[in-house]
Image 1 (tube, rainbow over the protein chains, first blue to last red):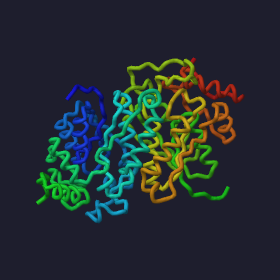
Image 2: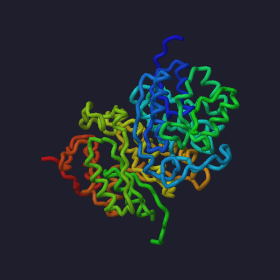
Image 3: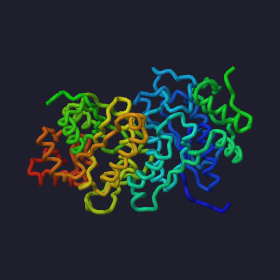
Image 4: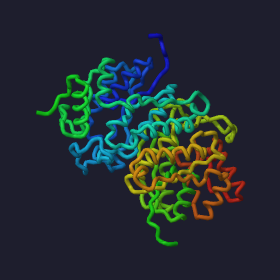
Length: 230
Length: 230
């Protein structure tokens, strides 16, 4: 592979999807800056996973920024007064209780600021419209609207070549994501998807996210490395 | 005025523009939630001003959220390694050193999250394209692009009536803003505009922001209540 010095900011949550996205960005020759957020999520174990994923995935650097999303309230993932529901119909039309208000808008806005100051013009996000559990900010139209905004909002967008928002998983099923990542050498044992993990990181196996993940490994025909609670 | 229970989130920085916007939103009958950010700005005195402005302006509540924008680097307003420049040509074409990467994108993203969880569908921002000092995220096209994004990004945008982003100052000169606010009873003595205020809040009188403000009062024919350093 020829040397390619283009930098990219890659949103790395510690989950399966963003680990795959980091591997894809690396395979495309980007120098990757991993960006993770501490936002009062219940599944803070994700942050430990994000650190390991960034290292294993070959990011040149990882930034962890603290965001007060939990103070906005309104989501089972950050509000301790709302219970995380067990899996219902994870790909149904309803927007689930685990929806976090404006999350991807806020994450991409921070990524845009970091990209502008570090000279990166490419931002990678693991948004996925197939198994997206009804989150409106995981659809292609949202990604396109953010790219358009980014190029109106910034000095680099106005004066320079502009930003590209990459969502390489957007049309893939969970099984396709897992196959792609496995080809690229992603160690999914490091990743954490559960909304309700035990302190030792064991997954609950029953939340929406666990259900989608387990089904993905099954459909991909790849052994599931997830450690579930006994 | 008839009772109007519609809530709005109003970005209140403590400066002259946002104090005027709060007065406008109130005059239009909104129940206003003031939203301010602690983002490592040099001019933290703005935060004290924001509290006073929110109270004087009749906000029903004020939220102050801490954002790690300073950790992104790249601006004279948050990076202590870059000097704040004295006024050059404040309305020229160049984007100035005091530009903060992605600032209004990040602020509006947080406002969107708060609006969604509090049931507000209207967001007010004091962006201004006339005296905008070359910030790309103060132009009408940016505001329109954010409104479009907001209605793709959120449960309330997808399922409900959608969000409106109001930038009532966008086409006004500083003098027109000051006249409008004065009519509405804004106490500009409470506001702070200086990029480099003294610890006792006295303004420097020479930065871009001070220069625009002083010229605005002069052109409006209204006595300038700003206290300048001796």
